[in-house]
Amino acid sequence: MSRRKKKPSIYVKTRRRKTRAQRQYQKYLQSPEWKDRRKGILRRANGRCERCGDECDRLHVHHLTYARLGCERDTDLLAICNRCHCEDHGIGGRKSKLGPKRRPTLPVSEETREALRAFAERMNQGPQDRGAAPCS
Image (cartoon, rainbow, N blue to C red):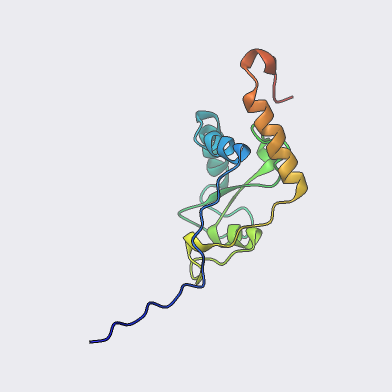
């Protein structure tokens, strides 16, 4: 009995370490402040994608800019459907052959990188260093 050789995968399974800014951003997304802001944006959308107008059960809250990360205005955020969110990030929708674990890494603009750095610096400061109004 001969054994079949396993075909090599064309996808290399590597796990890239997240940067400090990415870890802090993920921590921010778990914070009560973000959860409240997210609920407000979803309430504003009333079950409809704010980009295409489709009625959806599940909406994503999408940042239009990262310039005020942690201090977002309501106008910086949109409640959008999965299809519109995937289009914004240039990835396939539900029927993507890549699947959720094999998505290509998205390019990050220098503006976004700088906003993430500024956010990380604000998060590293103690409350006394941030002053009374960090979101001015």
